[in-house]
Image 1: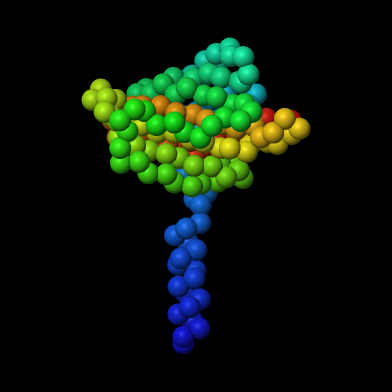
Image 2: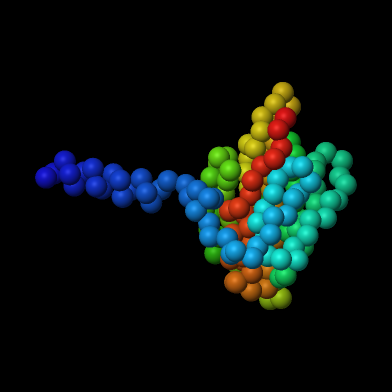
Length: 163
């Protein structure tokens, strides 16, 4: 009996600390696939677009959709999520994004027009002689519902990039 309790306790504990799998996300049936160039795709609400932005050392752009604008950086040595000044009530959730370890960070901001921050960081999408290729997507939104939508988008990422 004691062994059974230990096994059940270990299973319960592992379930609480194991990273969430992004495939567990429930994506609404009317969402569409939006490509960030040839790098990755997300499922997103209808009307969402991706705009490529030229930068020196990274693939960059932004997802634009109903209630959000999300800057994207995909390149070598992208730092972890940087919180906005004055951010509080920070929470980070580890997850697996298309078989890659990552994290989603949420926080409250001091901006009353956009009080909800959310960011996705996948530090090692692909690895080559120059180091790890990382994905960083962040944004601030006006409503908690918008942050939930963005979180579902993050959980639906599928990488297309192959080095």
